[in-house]
Length: 237
Ligand code: DC
Image (cartoon, rainbow, N blue to C red; front, top):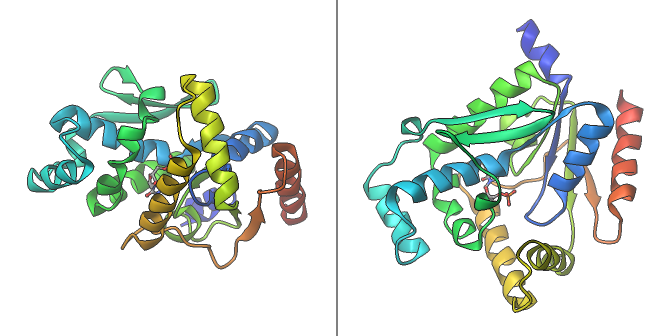
């Protein structure tokens, strides 16, 4: 019990929708405070990657979802490790370190089936809590302040308008993949679809924690958001 109370002193949660900038801010905040950043979405992505490796992409996300359920693919069968190296979160599947391969649109379209599944949610939450017991962490996701660390003292909800979020994702795609034939309206629709899935998930849905500080980053620079968070944290510490 004592450990539990102690470790919650060192957990800062950042929840919010896709493209709100929470991962970028969480990374900056962790660096500033000497904490470790955990990207919980990346762990859901990694399990999705593991399932894709096992059953393939199939013809559509729906078919992928059907086969995933029919074959009852359990997370325990995958050897996924999450740890820190030089202050950075590393996710390893067997011997493969996962990075950019987790960020494709094809994978993103298939995450829903893994994120909706109780066995995977249970497994991811266990990984997150194990890390939080051992390290001071800033953890970003959808249900960090509500489901995984409801007793954490420091909770933020990071939001932005749909237009700004779509623009940020568009710029990310152009920069990372050097593609310029992506339609921003299409990205906007993808984000709206994911918002709906994230908000309506039966367990682990995206919700604003009751005791969270809400920050709309639409008209703020990264540094402005970082300073705002630091100001709130200094008041609380
Ligand atoms: O943050 P992200 O876009 O990388 O997250 C990818 C997906 O993972 C997101 O659409 C839903 C799922 N996810 C979740 O269900 N719970 C979390 N705490 C984090 C992510």
